Image (cartoon, rainbow, N blue to C red; front, side):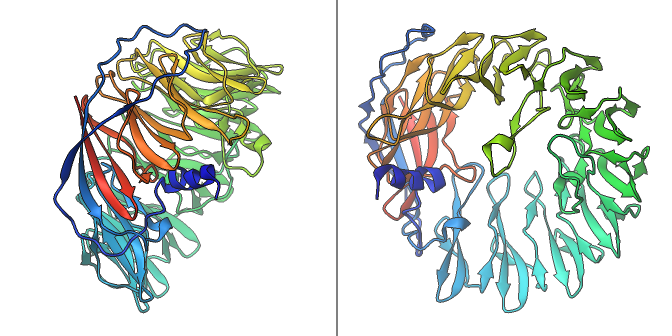
Length: 561
C-alpha cells in the first residue's frame, strides 16, 4: 500500500489504528532519556520578514511511558474513546460473539452488545449502554444500572458528579437522573444538564403534543419545539432530540426554547411564552446569562429580537446573532434586496454582495458555503471582524475598515490574538493560499491548515500542505514566518503556556513522533489525534499524549529541559 495512504489511515483516522486490542494489564511507568534529532528549518520566506523571536536552547527530552494496553489488536475501530485530559482510553472488542469494554486495559464482563463509551468531563468516570438478551442498561464506573427494554447514551453533568439518560419500557419512555426514574412519556429527548450541574431539562412527547421538562416540572404543551425559521443555513424541520431545542443560560438561572402553537412560533423562557411570530430561530443567551436574542419572521420579513425588543425588518437574517464575550454587544448579518450587511449594536454597516461564509455539511463544494456567517469578536469585546465580498473579490472588514481584496477569504479562520490586538486569517489568490497577519501577507502555499496565536499573542503558527511531483504531498509547520522540516503529515500544533515552545505531531516514513521546538521525539507507530485526543502541555516544560507501538498503547509524558 502507498506510504501516504497508510499514514492517512494512521494519523487521519486514529493516527494509530494498526493497533487494536484484547488482553490488558497495567505496568509501572518506565522512564528513558530519548536523544532528540534536530530538524533544521527550511529556507525562510522572503516576505514578510520573520519575527525576531529568541531561539530557545536545544531541548533535552526525558520520556516516561505508562502502559495502558498491552494488546489492542482486536479493538473495534469505531469504538475508540479518549478522556478529556488525554490520559485514558477505552474501546470495545468482540470475544466469542460477545462485546467487552476495555478501559485503560481493564476488561468489563461480556455483554451481547454495548453502546457509545463516554468519559466524564473530569476524565475520572466512564459510562456506556450495555445489552443482555432483550434488556438494556447503563453501566457507570463498572456498576450496572436498572434493566429496561432500551436505553440511550448516558450524559454526565459538567461537574462529572451526575448521570442522566433516556430509558424505554414498552411504548413508554422516560429519563433516569442519578438512578431515579422520572415521569413516563410517549417519547423523550436527550437530557441536558445546566452549566452548574444542578438542573436537568429534556423534551418529551405526550400524544401529538410536546413539552419541555425542567427540574422535574412539566411545561406547557406545544405543537412542537425547536426552531422553524429558514435563514441561510437552517432546516425548518422540528426535532425534539436537538439539543438546541432547549438551552440553559450560562449562569444556569434560565431555561429557554423555541415552541410552536399551530402555525405560529414563539420563545419560552422559564416557562413564560413570548410574542408569537410566523417563524422563529433558536434562543441565544449572552455569556453572562442576562440577555437573550433570537431571529424571528413576520410575513416575508425577518428581524432579530434582543432582550424582548424587535429590531429593524430585513429581507433576510444570517445565522444566529452573536454576543460579544463581555455580553455588552451583539452582531448579526442581514439582507436587503440582494445586498448583505452587518448589524452591530443596532447600527447597519456598509452593504456588500455577500458577508462571511462558513462551511456546512454538503455533498458539493459549491454549496458548502452560506451567506451571513458568524462575525468574530475579539476576546476583549472591543473589536469585530468578518469577511465580505464586493463583485468577485473577498476581503476582511476589521472594526469597519476594509482590508486588501483577494480571490477568497477563509471566513471561519478569522483569529484574534488573546490580547485582542492582532488578527490573522487565510486568504487565497488563484490556486494558492497564504496567511495574513496584521495585514501582512505570508508566503503562498497550496493549502493552509490550522492557524493559532501563542498565549502571549506574540507568535503565530500554522500548518501547510504542498504538492510536489512524485509524491502526494508534504506537510510542515510555519512558526514566526519560518518553515519547519517537511513531513508526510504535520498536525495538532500547540504552544506551551508560556508561549516559548511549539509542539506538533508529525509522520515520516510511516513513523509518528512529536516535534518540540524543531526537535523530533521518540518514534511510535501512531499518536492518537481523534475524538478529542491531542498533545497537551502540562507546564511550560512538560507535555503528554497517547501513542502506540505495534499493538501496545502508552500514556507518554515528556519533560523538556
